[in-house]
View (cartoon, helix red, strand yellow):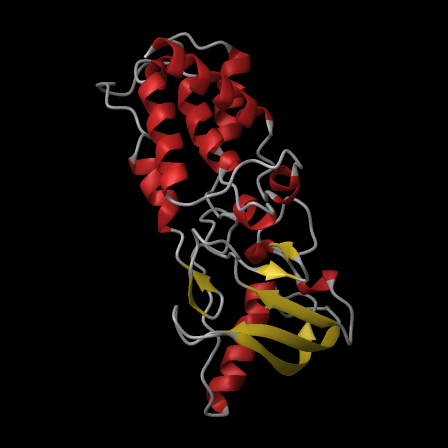
Length: 255
């Protein structure tokens, strides 16, 4: 919990409340006083929920797990931006020092038909799991861990694969896109394997199956606006979308 030498903020929170997936939702307004600028955004929510519980009210449901910017669970739209006002920062790594005393903060769930709202700020992102199950893996037997450099991989390819693998699947790319496109997420998962020798064996089936599943889940088409890259907390590059499109066209021609 935040403490130390931080300043204290008085805030007004406008938070989306929705009982379940079928119920209509609306914004509820909460006044919160004495929030330390040392707190993270989720710690601020913990304080709010503790206050609500003590008042006999229902706390706000929101997703969280690692709180270290790794798991991608902390999906919230804050003041009109996925994960809030800071670039390359997940909600759990966002600190209250980036807000002003007296500020009104609006918090919403991801808005996409493929990510239905389950309750308050919690959305169902299992569509991403099904896209991964459609092809985001390798089935070749890689055996035991190899000695370093036993399988030669060009350094530029290894770096690009590692950068694509940094995608945490939070869904900010979908939330930021006006078409709710999942192209950045899917292309990152295609790229991280397609760039490595172990992943090339099934590369064509992988891209065909993952794109097919992405379309079946109801994600929209790429808008070419770059909003996904701009809001991605892990700075996944649009270059991956171009690579996935090349892989997809080649697979369609040769399969």
